Length: 154
Image (cartoon, rainbow, N blue to C red; front, side):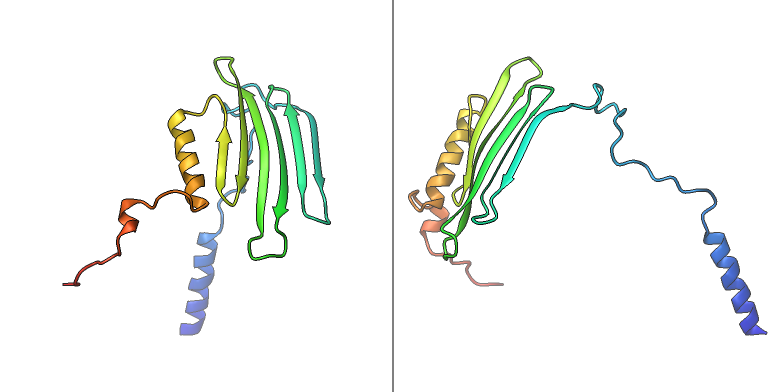
């Protein structure tokens, strides 16, 4: 008797947990969303090439809103301890005020290095310091020049 009561209660519990209406998933991207008031931006041209022999690649595209991007990637020193990817490229777009913006960049074992008129001078200096530090040319920060001594743990 107790077993049949437990089974009946379990079935009632499962039916109470069942969905009460149909499930309609929301689309991840809605082209009529207020985030895209103009709708789709057409791709006017695009190209992607991958070299299976040395794993280098290049791609480019141009879209209907005037934005473009191109990139080339290679593996430097393949098969060695210092193997690293190196990427060069650029992207451009039209700023909301109508100004054309272009950024050229290098990304390699020394980090991401953007170059462009729209990049603030302080950011360019910070990137140059980062690259020098990665190459081992920059002086160590003050806190790294002395030995770390945390003192006694109380």
